[in-house]
Amino acid sequence: MVIDKEKIKAGVRLILEGIGEDENREGLLETPDRIARMYEEIFDGMGRDASEPLAKTFSVEKNEMVLEKDITFYSTCEHHFMPFYGKAHVAYLPDGKVVGLSKLARTVEIYARRPQLQEQLTAQIADALMEFLKPQGVMVALEAEHTCMTMRGVKKPGSKTITFAARGTFAENDKLQERFFSLLKQ
Picture 1 (tube, rainbow, N blue to C red):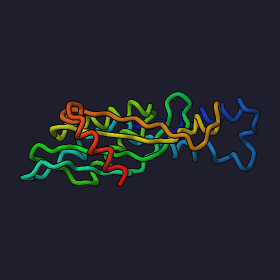
Picture 2: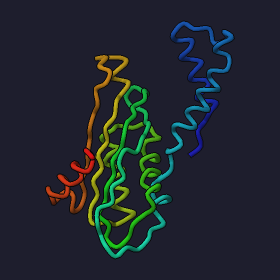
Picture 3: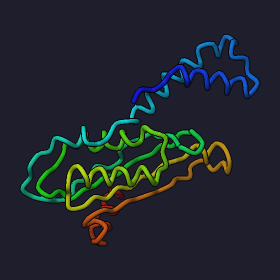
C-alpha cells in the first residue's frame, strides 16, 4: 500500500487552520511534510501480512513452548489517532516447526503499525501465528499504555490495558495458560 503524502500534508494544513494556527509561521512551514513522512513510517504495516516473516521455519524434534516476551511495540489508536505502546508476549507450542525469534517481533510490528485497537492487535497476532506456523497452540498477551486515556479524556497516566488471546491447545489447557503467565513474571 502506498501512502498518499500529498493528502496527508493537505489534511495537516487543514488541522493547523482549524486550531487557529498560521501554517506559514516559521516553525510550522515544514510540519505537514514531517507529519506525512512520519505517517509513512508509523503506518508501514498497512498492506503487509505476517506470511513474509513467518514463511521460513525450521524442523524440531521436541515440541516445547517457545515464548518471546517483552517485545516493545508502538501503535496508533484508531479512535483518536493517538499512540499506545507497551510490551507484547508471544508463545506457541510448535508442531514440528519453529520460526526464528526475530520473526515473532516482526509479526507484532506488522500488525502494530496500523490504526488499531489493542484487542484486535492481540487477536491478529495470535491468528497469524496459527495460520502461518500451524502450531499446536498460541498465546499472546499485550500490556499497553494508551495516550488517548493518559493525556486527554480521563487523564490517568500509568494505567495499563492488558489483553490476551489463546488459540489451540492454549485455549483448551488451563495449565499451559498458567505456565505462560508464570513465565511472564520471571
